[in-house]
Every structure is written in structure tokens, then in C-alpha cells.
Length: 134
Image (cartoon, rainbow, N blue to C red; front, side):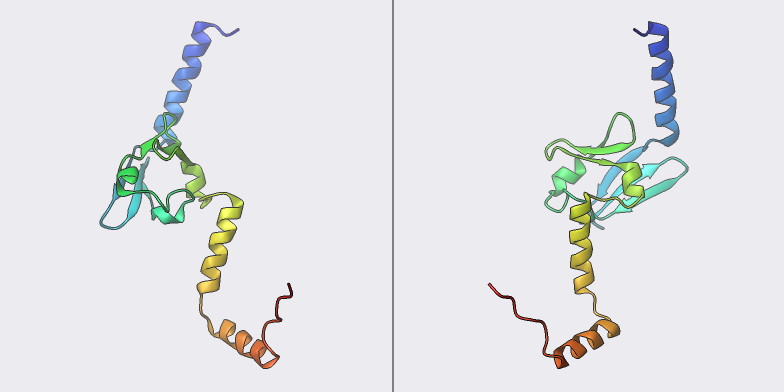
């Protein structure tokens, strides 16, 4: 069992860690459709809500109710029961692996490049995509 003194020491250390590394504020800018997280050192983390898993269907009211978790290292929206890690967002981990793969596929499939067009034409000359068999 830990003593009261050990508990207070650990709590103080946690508060110092949060003050040094935790988010200072969060807000949603409706005009630009961006979530803005204020970080220590005059840094900002800015992202569009639909780029993060679970926020594509969030309402303006949901986004405006976003708050920083007690640790200072996460974001939370109560009504959606949504949480995100700020270090994860900084590292561009914006969702589960399957959700991120799906999003990357959508974006990659929508991209038009000269190389992609040439490959499609060549594939068409060869008879196109094979038909699916039931």
C-alpha cells in the first residue's frame, strides 16, 4: 500500500507533466471547419474533423463541446463517447488501422495522375478488368 506522501508526490509529478506536455486549449473554428488544439511552446495542432475517425458525422455543437481530458493528453466529446490521443493525432494516427486503410484507399482511388491514366489505357487495350464470376 502506498502512503499519502507517495500519492501526493505522484500526483504533483503528474500535474507537472501535464503542464509541460498537455494541451492548453481546444476549439472548433466553424468558418474554416477545423479543430484547433493549443499546445505548449506556442504550437497549434489544426485538423479537419472528417480526417479523424468518429468525427465525420459530428455536429457543430458536438465539435464545439470538445474538451481536453484531465491528463491534458487527449480530446473528448461526451455525447459521441469519442476520445483521441493528442500524441496520436500529432503522429497522424487519426483512427484504427482498418479505418485509415479505407480512407487512404478512397483518396488514392480518387487521385488522377498521368501514370494512372496510362496504366488504365494499357489495361483497356489488354481487354480491361477481368469480369467477376459469381
